[in-house]
Amino acid sequence: MEEEIQMYLDEAKDLMRKAVDHTGHELTKIRAGKAMPNMLDGIMVEYYGTPTAIQQVSSINTPDARSIIIKPFERSLINEIQRAITNSDLGLAPQNDGEVVRLNIPPLTEERRQVLVKQAKQEIEQGKISVRNIRKDSNNSIGKLKNEGISEDSIKKGEEQVQALTNHYTEKLDELFTKKEKEILTV
Image (cartoon, rainbow, N blue to C red):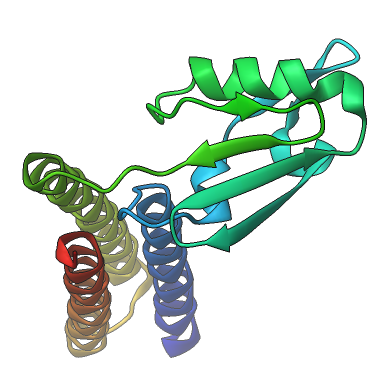
């Protein structure tokens, strides 16, 4: 009978880890004033009529902290890449020299840094909501085991372990925020 509780705990741990990983991935999309290839994650380019990730049709390099160079595998894609970046919410003006697309990353203003910190805080809060929802679902599942004859002590212990997992992954999210906030505010 204890195996069922353990199964729910393992599932909760896995889901919480995935929620933290997802939040971390979302945070990488928030630019911190320096050029990073993952800033372009999610940008799709029309490739023979099919929306395709920009990373699949070009090589992306950062020669220095303030610029990104995108070299398409096919020259014919250069205008499409430029258009996709212009239409994205990155707020960057791509420059095309016929061979590559260059993105110059301007330094962030203090006001923009504060907006990005707020955005990071919202992502972290979404992650915490996910973790708390997983806790609620796990506790509900464990609570239902009472009807199957599992002792109240075992159920209580299982719920305490779910809470310990919740606390652990909430702390991980707070660490992610602290790290991202420092990254954004560092000039």
